[in-house]
Length: 94
Image 1 (cartoon, rainbow, N blue to C red):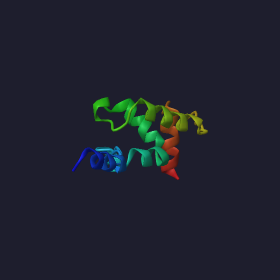
Image 2: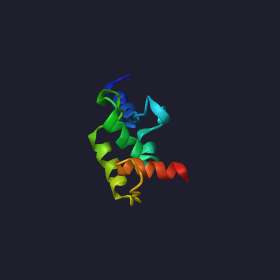
Image 3: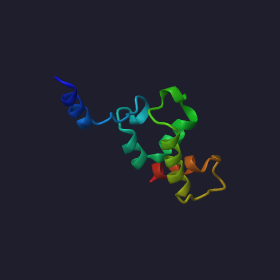
Image 4: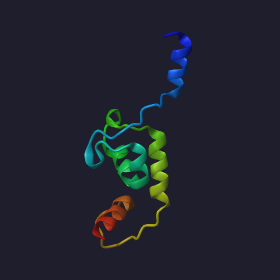
């Protein structure tokens, strides 16, 4: 196999897609979780050691933007202060 063949093969290769190795989304692609559950990415960024995360700050910022743009219903009787947790709790209750 010469250099030209190696370059052709390498150009056809796709980079690996990062997956979660922990939690409720274990084995799921980061891009899938970003679309379906952005608040989980925000939670993971805030609560999991960065060395375990399969994504970087850019993905966190994108997820945080999604979550921040969502409208929250604030309930004064709710003990939780974090609007992301309030929103996630509201979805779980439906």
